[in-house]
Length: 190
Image (cartoon, rainbow, N blue to C red; front, side, top):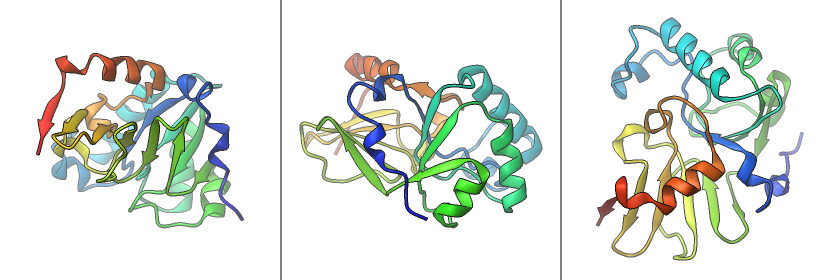
């Protein structure tokens, strides 16, 4: 089975897509690692599912930037079946299964990274050298890195890990409006 082509995400369609990364459904240790405000994975899964569904309608498209869930095919499918929207995903470092496995549970896999309109590059891990004309939208680093950051070298990054988004997928057009007003959130890094 081949990857789903990322060309469905073009400059005009991407604005209506919701973006998120690093839910880590069913991951016991993530609560401790990222200081998540949950007592256990049952509570975490229920709360993240509720927040997702309040934010995502049945017909919405969600672009997940990796590390969706741990667990067996059955347990991951049960979570997927509870979530609204059509999910496309870039494979994260914890997404260990093949393209068909994810398709069987209702998630369409996209290659490791892709660009849209020469302005945005989507990936799971942050890309260190991003052309100055582009913004890298990624996950992977959880709450270790702020939502928006720009290095002294002009590398621009947006970290859409769940901890930075209040566990809710964000509309891409809203994310870009926030980026455009990032001086209110922004942290310079070296």
